[in-house]
Image 1 (spheres, rainbow, N blue to C red):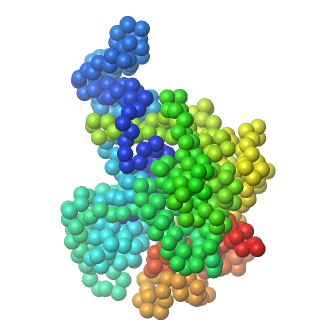
Image 2: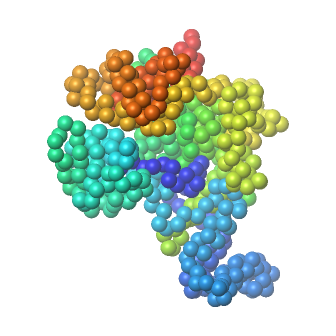
Image 3: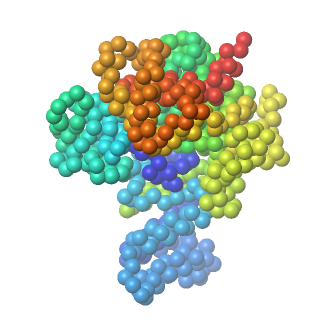
Length: 557
């Protein structure tokens, strides 16, 4: 089953971790960790003593330090508050507020959320193994995950899940979260799922044994032109580097000599994964990044001799959603004059978090250092005005015109750095691209956007795919479909009729542009519903301005 990557945005957004598979043996921020445990312990009814903290209070004992103030207040509330309180909830709110007051990326993860928050970085989860969407209040299978339990049992793209354990789940306004709760579970457990399949008269029951399902970091890799490969990395997780090597080798066999690496919308992840990817592009000994914090000495990460794409032309795509680990890769290659960076200013997250697991299954992610690109720039944007304004800044870029013109981009021009090749780069608020590409606000007509918002296009894509699935699979491979299939005018007229039935009239002034837009979108959706990502991305990317610019640069003699 696919992960809804937006369920835990505030916890996961733009987070780099100091550790990967291993935890450091010691950490200078252990006193804060112990303080958190102390707060939890007090609320649960037991006390811990911390000599190091008391000594720091000038010998005054527990009554003379700020930690005692927190625990005393909690105890006072517990004993004398007018109503009965939920001690666990109060403590968790206290811990959350304490961490949020530090910076936008230090966070507390409740035990109940820990597994799901971590799984996008660990690279797997346990469930039945499908990607799904909810269309017309019905769960539609976009694709079974290759090798997963559903794939092995024969569940297919386009199937409708109408019952789980005999209970109807269609037409009840089910949410993504409720789908997760019903279909996910421990490896080895079973769940009965009832499927309605196009062309099959009666529903089909599948008894699915849940298993471990891989989560992939690389959405797609394919050849966009002879000699030019394209690869999109959506996060930097524990498996990202291995996935990269597999995709890279496959592209190399197809004749790749130049690469477009798409990091747009990539919120980050493991620092180690970013370093490993950057290492593939940089010569032995070149600096990738360094980290440094008040209690964390400077640590420098350098490229090794293992890189396999160190001299070939490279373009990296970024935008306002590219953060942390993505900015490490973009910053390292830009500062070493290794890649052309295309797009818009990246998010601007230069803080590194370290995770500490707590005894009750919860965890704390604490900012322990900043990272710096090879020229010495820290690209962390300001956060002194609070978390709300910090994230609002990303939205303000639209209203300020930054998404449309490079001249409107706001950054600190005084923080100027020079690369070995003489190129000027800037710190203090994200990676500035070498080549600016504006947001294409006029890509789709207002009518097409309205069809999107009302779910008409997605719904039609599913229903039309069901009608032609067998014919398409018999005639085309994913690549042949991408290159040769043509959406006819009759298909678009059928969609227009569907729109009018939904009381969305087709404006005559927009009909020509809308028809061109819709032919591409419907083809992409048919490709996704039948071939998954292997046909979807190659079709939808054909009109992507950043990719077109990258191809233009790479095809220059």
